[in-house]
Length: 387
Image (cartoon, rainbow, N blue to C red; front, side):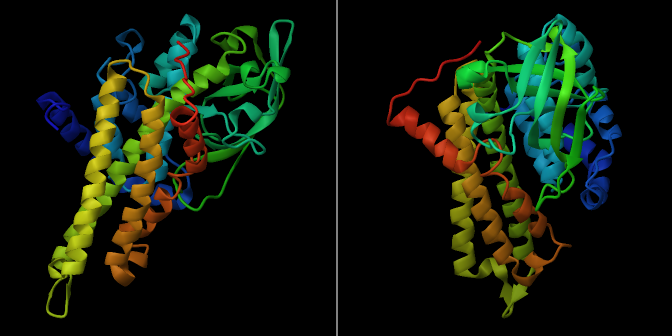
């Protein structure tokens, strides 16, 4: 992949890998058990510049190309905690990208800059109990009363939803306009009327995932981000980045699972020979490796286009759809190759299988992505950039 990664990229990978080995890996099992990540790790990430890779130097970022972000995402998957990785990238990309794109100068100064430094943690609130992948069907309402917006409604499945310092919230400002009546708001955690409760999940145990309630939450008028009633377009544009991120995560965890399994098979013997000498297993390994390599190459190609500011909503949706499918298959097959040990919690595949299963669900289910792609491919619908 020399056309994408320079020597500087490779040095960054080595440095970030060492950082994760020292600062994160020793704590993962504890964070998985308690379902709570020590918030000090956000500050350590910020101090090292890891939250500012693709943000402006004006706010403390490094203004680097998107392939540094790819390295960051890939290495995060190797600590074997989908929940920890999600907490980091949900802050750095889901919440912060809205601050960066739609926030005014005050918001960038007071929220984006502290987010880059790790002093503040954010979350993005879109999904609702009665409107999952149907973003246009959200019921949370924002009503303007004088110089304040009043929020009423609820959100669910929100990563960093219980412990973040601020929330980027989507709400209807013109309910009759459906998708064309959505706006985006910035809400401080301590605002009266806001409450959150953590959810118990099958996987992503380390991450803080919450259901959030807004009961007469009053926020300043200037906390509207971007133009009123333009929120749907903002969400759709940023969701393309989220879907590519989830596609990259998928190929990275699948590759990591395969590397672990390949090493295990070289050490484990049955019937007098190593497992990697059995033709059936060797050939299956080759098939899985081929599928991963294809999707990884596709993801890098999309990232290269995104790096050039091209609009890649179709390709990013394809990435998430196919990469998460491949990752789930790889996890299932790798666990099978470990036999009974694959089913044991002390081996990494059990957690990886659970964590991977969220891939085809979060950020738009595979079923929704297929319909979006069908509209673009079959119906010739042309989605346009919002910015």
